[in-house]
Length: 250
Length: 313
Image (tube, rainbow over all chains, first blue to last red):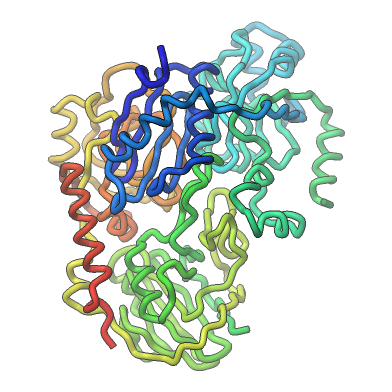
């Protein structure tokens, strides 16, 4: 089925329109999301002010004094016909060091128990897979990662934690993810990364780089972007502290 | 450079402008003033563009000292402001002299008040905006709410002081509402008519657990929607999601950018500033309107805000 026949439009609010592709979580459908995003970045439609991409949909926010739902749908249809023409750059490969278990992964033991696996087996499974960044959502820099091995698929916690430490690596259902900030969270935490996933302060180096063409350098703020491929690398608690110290002195 | 000394920060005071739009692909929500109308009017009164950074105070205002002459305006909530113990009118520009103390107390109406200063609060812009996003600690003044002893810089501006005030009849027509008008949400059809009636026919109470991310509502439970679970999708400002517990949540300016709960409705754009003035324990209810009405209500509001009669000198 082509993108256009499967696509469906639905008003979400008086200033936003949801565009649904085929409703399933898969890299093939998500690619259409990435292609549309790219096309709209290259050839913007006047009046669209923001985009919220997700697994198999895009929320398009517009200025309601300039555009209506129907106008926007009419403007978007030709874009859908041209998705196949969009050439995307090779996905970036991103490496995330993780200290698994212990104080950093308080739910590792429970995940082992659910699947009758040893901690080492869980670590091996989690760190051997290649993940795809389906989209960033929830909070700044939070990447929804697909590709969790079937043997690790675990339901989220029945009661979410009020606060999850920044850098926590969690799993929930078929997904994995890293919390960029201390936020409430219901995913099962199996480890933590010392990486800064999202820069909230401009360091001098960033200042210069970002001041001019801000929108073109967004990648410098978030460690992960839509479409990236991700690997997790196990590290020791010692290496974790070393890397944290290096961040602090940078 | 001119500055403001924060002698008392109030309950929760942050630097806000009209927010940063366009960074949804990074998971960054717009943030910005909870009551955009009040911020915009305050800025107009002191001769600033509407998008100038100001202080947003919540429920309890602070005490501020000025290093030099400053042209100011207070809009939004009435915090019973005084300048060196002399009461100050809301929605009217005024001058403060060096060393004078502007004191604000607990709210007498609404939830959020704005202190706008000619020139604006000078902070490093983050992704093009001065707005604070509290959860992630980005933007604003060090990414956080103000504390006692903070010193804020005021950007230079040199318009002569003019006493300006907002036309009372127009202000009245822009007053915050407790009846929020809603258009259908993307999952409205998953809620049977009986659930929709519970939502539209009852009064809901704004919970204490409400903030700039979202307003939690207490009231009759809205039965779970039917159908397969929603695959996480982009969510709009003002979306009213109904989690399994049945208590609705209105997504607000520091909203999550995506979510997986079904949405029964969406507060219209023209009523979003009213949401910013809701206090915990306020009673509200919802009124269903069409997309066409939502649009014409926004146009009417825009006409008021661009009316030549709006600001009087």
